[in-house]
Image (cartoon, rainbow, N blue to C red):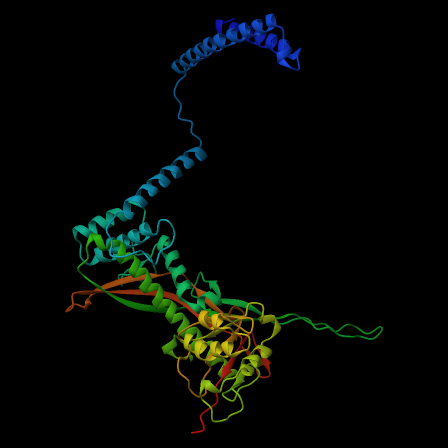
Length: 466
């Protein structure tokens, strides 16, 4: 038996005696003085033994380490966890460093605690890839190396875009730009977005359900079937153009990344809103027939079940003629199944000069209510403003719609944002042209049919008498 083992046994015996002595008394104050002194002595012995045992234990561990061959036996989970921790620590330090860098203004178009880093890395990616291919400088070389150090893609990699100088925006930034696009874009936020893995996609749509019959005794039940058809999506290229000065500096990287993200996201969001709401099926709108035109095509310019004609004055083309009862007719025409997520869609001008006016004209408003303005709800439904809707009165147009856009339309999205650059487009001005492209499709597939209102209904102004 080793000295360490002897000490451990001795300590256990003394500890057991100590436990026994204290166990005789529920109240330790009743313990006789002689027993108290004996317990104090045993306690001192236990402390001395603990010190000696710890010392010998350390010596045994040192002996074991000296005689055991080294093996690197970190399991994969532990290794991955350590690598992740190192990456997080490195990223935290980089976030702090970038926040201290000079910039021209507050970052507005990236979100989160690391928004400055996102803008900075997006700017570095832009300079280190797209600009680097056009003109290699100390700045572009440094930005390119930064991208490589941080694992940001610096190669063009989409079908056919390599020869055109196009670069897919890495997922780290594409997701932020998609978020911005949804923030700016009314149509995208409210329609049903369908991811597309290829150029075309067919999505099933329920047309009708089962039918109940009332057969007599002994008569066979008539069969019925649930009927489906297909909504076809075929991607179309959307493109936008932004102009930048060719005189770029390292201090501007954060601002460049932030501004470029905003320009691209806003341009695409505006195009999606314009086509989704106003498209007439021509190439001007990427072949898209928007909600407003679809309502007119379905119910004609004289109105119908899903297109409420303003008042009964045949000569009116003025918004001033629109009454609360016209909006109540729209709400009455909207099918119940579409009311749960229904919203009003119109321009800010229309809301404040027509709907807001009717809202405040209703009884019960105080001076405080008028000072605070009307609620962005109307007849119990939220109001969504989009400036692609009409901002001036006109004859035979649809200034306002109501319904659930997700039931009436789909947006097929390949989510491939590509950027390309030209230094020739504005050569005389010494400016760079940045082209952004995406591939999507918008299909407004259901606004109802003759005599049957769909999940979206509209308000139609009368034709002018002249």
